[in-house]
Amino acid sequence: MTDSRPIYLTKAEESLRGAENEFAQSRYNNAANRCYYACFQATVAALHHAGIAPSGGRSEWGHAFAQAKFVGWLIYRHRLHSTSLRQALGRNLTLRHTADYAPDLVTQTQAAQALQRTQDFLAAILEQVRAHESETT
Image (cartoon, rainbow, N blue to C red; front, side, top):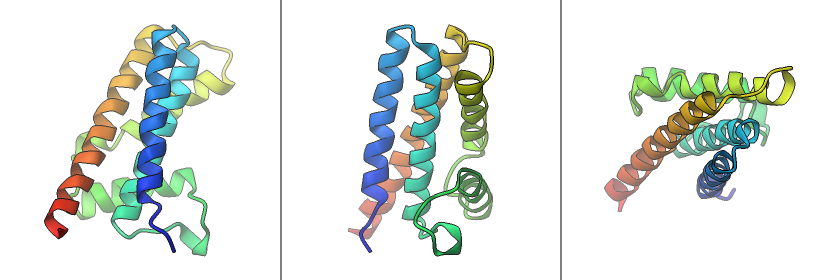
């Protein structure tokens, strides 16, 4: 099995750059969508890094499973991440649902908040992964 963690970190960084570009072009619905996926992909990378795999031997990650494992295992049980990160994925998912499915538009303020949450979230994941890698080398 190959290490998928670097792949998911690359995807997360790419999604964050996409969110930033969409925000700069005033495409707030698209920015919200990309913010959610940046957090989700970073979550998967963090779970991989911790040795947690998708349930049932599957290769795809369920969104609810990834969020529950991240919060339950990596924040509360193992204290690898700050509790300040626990709501980022859920808040971004709620906003993505507005952007993608609701008869409402994501506002500039909402998108800016999502972008800040996402930047903070990804920075924390990258910091933890790098710290662990420097300990093991």
